[in-house]
Length: 285
Image 1: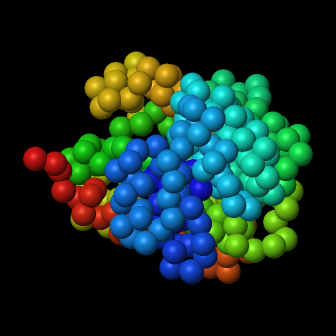
Image 2: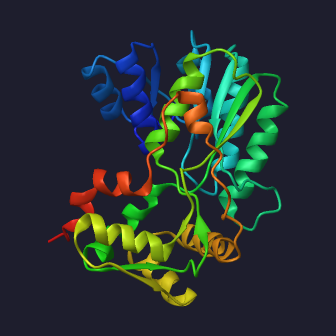
């Protein structure tokens, strides 16, 4: 399993461990490996930037969960991992993609996912592809301004069917441990679609603080991302992606695939805010 220390991957580890399903976490750092083993979980060192480390890490595994963070190296890393998995005899890969993946997309990670998905489908190995919409957890990037009463974005009046990463992990756990998902592509959405004005209203109701949506000019939003530590590559990609939101390209009807696959309805945005209420409500000192 890749991405074991990330938001989706760590929740997936918890779910698999809770279900008693065997898995092996791929770690880049010795400290991570020791942490997993301290919890009684199988873990091994390996690095997508060094594909030669992957073959031994994959020995004895039948299925691979594939996820990497969005970076300029994502295509190279994931295609190398797919090729390594095939050489190691892995029979199926469950991959996290994106609902807006498109080889012609100006959004860099949307284009990357489309290229990787194409490589996976032609790699001669079993596959299941999960295509979630934008993650509710992305709102945590704006916890500081939200705690001070404003939500700064460049989404205009555009709506998105945001999805909770906990639900994406539940779907991944299900398809990893069940038969019948071979060569399937699942579009994963939240239970409803809403704009940023509605998001601010729901935040206000839960954290008991008046939160106002501020639709920033693009240069100001770009500067905000820079100040908060985003790389230029990430900032440029987010600007383009939110332009797609303004254009209505993310205003899609809920698919209800999460409930169909797992038997449990996905979390709505209010559930997500309640789960992170203390994070949103308390400004950092």
